[in-house]
Amino acid sequence: MILGRGDGEEMQGRFVSLLPPTSGDFELIAGWLAPDAQGTALTGDSREIASPEEIRAAHFSGNLTFRMIKENDGEPLGFVNWRQRGSHQSFEIAIIVGEPDRWRSAYGGEAIVRLIDILFMTYDARRVQLTTGSFNPYTLPALIRGNFVLEGILRDFYYVDGKYHDATVWSLLRSEYEDELKKTEHLAGLKYVPSVPEDDKARARRMLDKYLAEGGATSLGTGGRGTDA
Image (tube, rainbow, N blue to C red; front, side, top):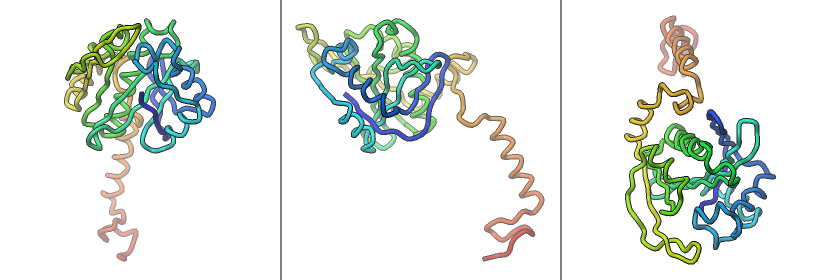
């Protein structure tokens, strides 16, 4: 199980948004992680127990990060989280859609897409990995569609419903993510939406170019609006 910290960024997709948790969300997360919750059976976390206070403390520890999965109308559906694993540019992620009636929807898949957008575009990730059970029919298709690479199988890793099951370890590297961006840039629901629109970036660059062209003062002492220190 992966627990986490929060700062300010959020990511909105076609169906869901990833938002920093509020104080009331920790109760929801604890419920979704309870041993008798259906979502924990799919993740293999059914033997772990975490209180809202423990989850909140982990979230603000600086080592782990949570985002709530919410429908764009605000209804909470589950959560994603991540932590550094290996180098400072390598991250391990997890996802739970806590509402069983949403498991067959596109929400979990879109949440994974938006999460890896955050990690590659905001945290300069080089590698993102996820571990899930070989018995999970909801997460596996999202990873396969997202062109994650199956790196390995951990034999008899989970114990669910009286039987041992393998864990599968998947990863996506930056070069593979960039290839996916090119493939999906024409798809409204999947393409990456910049946090600062490209037109705004270009407008700011033109303002800076104009300032320099007109002799604006700089730290190098050029231009006519300032004096050297």
